[in-house]
Image 1 (cartoon, rainbow, N blue to C red):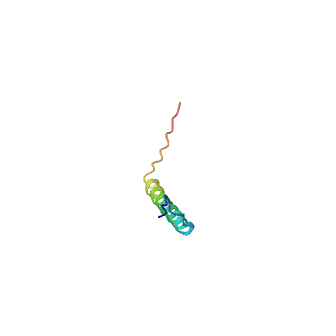
Image 2 (cartoon, rainbow, N blue to C red):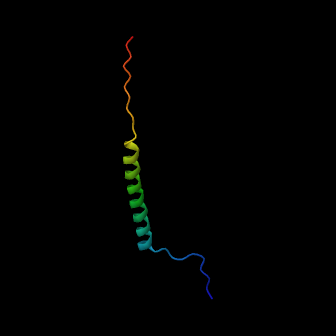
Length: 49
């Protein structure tokens, strides 16, 4: 009986996982950027000396 400690890596499965995580991070980044950009406040202070 041969014991194997690690399974051989499946490059197709690894590629799918990396692609999925990248897409989720991009979508989350766009969502959070647009949501926080709407709360941005720009104030100009005109100081006369």
